[in-house]
Image 1 (cartoon, rainbow, N blue to C red):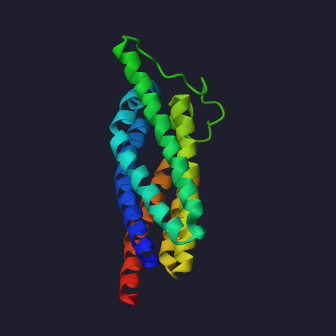
Image 2: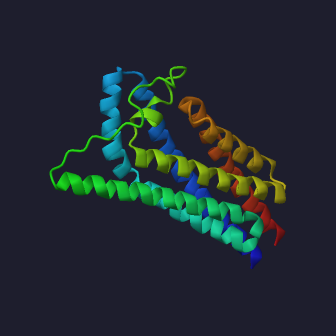
Image 3: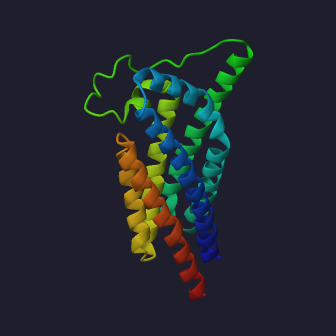
Length: 221
C-alpha cells in the first residue's frame, strides 16, 4: 500500500511538471520578445501581459497547483521526509489564489468601465542597469503579481528540495540532478534565458527519470 502512495504521488507530480514546462516556454517567448523592442513598446506589451497573461494561465496554473498538491500529499503520506514538498505546494497554491483574486479584481473593474494601469514597482530602472533581463519582472509587473511570483518561486524550491530528497532515497541520481538544475534555474530568474533553459532541462530530466523510478518500483513487486 505504501508503494502505491509513491507511484500515485509521482504520477501527479510528473503531469504537473509537463504542464509547467509548456507554460514556461510560452512565458520565455514573451520575455524574449520584450527584449527585442523599444522600452515604450516593452511597457505596452507588459501591460497587455498583466491583463491577459494572468487570465490565459489561470487554467494551466490551476492544473499545475492541483496536481502538485495531490502528488506531494501522497508522498507526504508515504513519508514525512517529503512533507516539505507538500508545504511548498501549499505556498504555490496561495500564490495561485493571489493571481486569481487579482484577475477577478481586473475583470470587475473592466466590467465597471474602469481602465486600470498597473502601478510600477519602481519608476526608473536605476538599480537594475547591469542587466536588461529582469526589467519586466521587477519594474513593470503589478505588485500583487510580483509578490505572487516570489511566493511561487519559494514554493517551487521547497518542492524541489523534496524531490531531491526523493532521488536520494530511491538512488535516482538524475532525479537529484533535475531537481538541482531546477532550483538553480529558479534562483537565476534575473536572467530569464539562462533560467528558462535550466528549468526546462531540469523539468525534462525529472519528468523522464521519475517515470524510470516508477518502473523500478513496479519491478520490485
